[in-house]
Length: 181
Ligand SMILES: [Zn+2]
Ligand SMILES: [Zn+2]
Image (tube, rainbow, N blue to C red; front, side, top):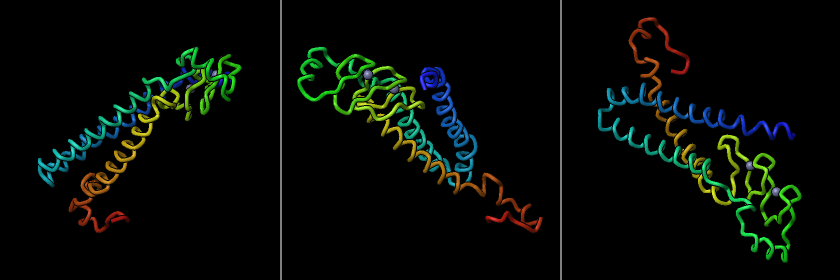
């Protein structure tokens, strides 16, 4: 477990790059293949509106992803010493690894090697713990990713016949159409 925990920080930049790469692949497909079809079939106004919506979703995805990655979730080292001592009068637990008091809902992360405030989980895709100060960015990232994925799936689905050239009369001439048409 210790070895695995220690190797995670080295793998995380690759996983973050993989996540960004997959998102950019979707963006490339959208602008390279779908937008030209939109311009051809629905005009520049419609294609422009879709492009603006897609870029707005993309901005929100990357904005929240960057903030979730770069914002410290908060840890007990950032809590003032006096506050920690005062807190010992209440029912705070003690972290033996940090050798410091541990506020309620905080947990020791073996990858970050510190107690994280209101820890949710250690996210390898963000290369960071998700906790008190970056939880909102994590939730917003998931929200915009979900909306963006649903949007691109819907747009691709509507354009499948054109993207795969299924409206090509050559299919009819051959006397068959793919099974899903
Ligand atoms: Zn700890
Ligand atoms: Zn962590």
